[in-house]
Image 1 (cartoon, rainbow, N blue to C red):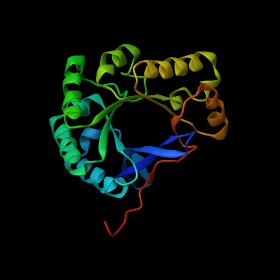
Image 2: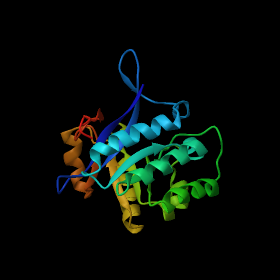
Image 3: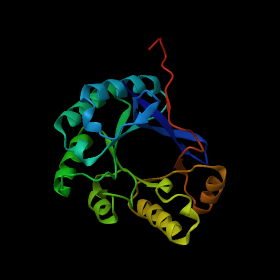
Length: 224
């Protein structure tokens, strides 16, 4: 059994929810656990679970972010399912969040861009997750930036080393990179009040993390 959990993406300064990230979980004997091999999940199940969540949120936010790694992005069944979802959910916009996960197949940047253009053509937007990690190196981000609406930097990948000058420099670099390219910058991994207050020094408004809300299943409205 699968289910999408949701987590808010917030604007710290005007105290608003700007979107939700959808995080796929699988039911185990112990608990709900993250899905590590998405290709084992049938595309129709993914589609059904996204629609189920979107029906509850469509009047609250303009977009919902769905994670895809590069292997999923190049899978025709996955792409077809998500394109159909976008048709069903308008005016809610599906945002593809391209993760940093390494792939066993070396896909070219041209192939990646070709797939991203399919989503953009249908009115969807593109986010690059966890910049500075895995596949989402600075060179790869620069290649994809013309097709991108957003980049995300994840503090949780570096523990609490946000207090180290070299990590602060990378946060500032990506914040300014996003501003230069006129795209949204989201800082993830705000785990507690101390980090939240420290990040206020960097003039970053859009944030995400356990401090604001932990991923959780949505309460389904029986009337929908």
